[in-house]
Length: 417
Figure 1 (tube, rainbow, N blue to C red):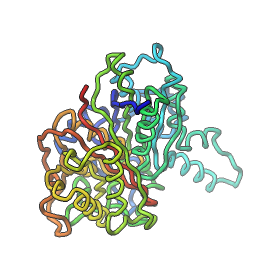
Figure 2: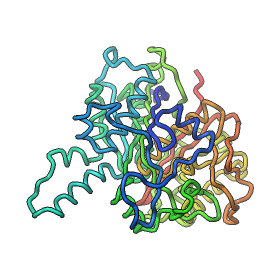
Figure 3: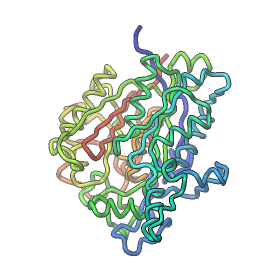
Figure 4: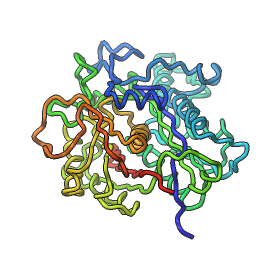
């Protein structure tokens, strides 16, 4: 029996630039920055005082108050984005075989705020271990897909993937494989992250990973700009619901795109720095293309990892040129992290959303905040600087690379019956 075809039939978003898919796409194509001074805690003594926070979000608008208090923000975000995706896809689970519907979710860190709060309370107390009984269930990464499956009664494959910033892309690849191998009909996939707190910002500051452009937060995320000085932290969630093609057609589902390939690789180089020659980045895109049965000439757009770090942006651009050759100059390339910031484990899901919507609308979102060209980048590459560009997008790659040298890429294409 051959591999089954897998399509995207539901989308949900809760991001720093929009609390729904339509809001997200409108802001993305208009080049809106989500970066602003942090409101969730006092940043007076922190090196970085800004981030891309989720805005105008009250979990009690979506969740029972008592239940919301039992959930870390990263789980709240997961449930809210998934609620939108389920409504969007029109799934009536009472009429579907829920034994063949699963949840595979990605997060790089999970319940960091819960961990920080509980340990801080213990450290400032009298030494008596008065931990909240929900401490562990609120914190662990796999609790997000657990809550989603409980809410909708889904009994198929259910687990979490953790590969730092590649986490939700790995989740989508796993979901894709389970469905095309015939082991599930529908899988809710995606990722969420909530690290804009004292521990998250302090930790990344200590690594010198974050931008410190406190005088101008809105332009701090500057992928491929000469003056980039680190990434901008982001938070939120993205949900991508994947479905076996014939199953989707039988229930009359709308189809956003087809997922046709996934690639994975390791840099095997350094715990945080990318390979200096971009070997892991080149290999992961090579693997994704091979899995999809596509050539470099078939790709019109790459939503790059593009974090706005001095080393990472250079190596990814080098990998694209090395792999694509002359086809590299026919591509549109853009980093939507210039607007959303870096959502870490949720980055892959949110950027896959951007990639799918680019295919649907034949419109490539921009890389904003470009002011000065960097001679380290090939000037013939089209980074889609500052303004969205119309073009037919037949197929597109979304790249995510994580600490530990984890690389993951997914390929989507226009659906054709």
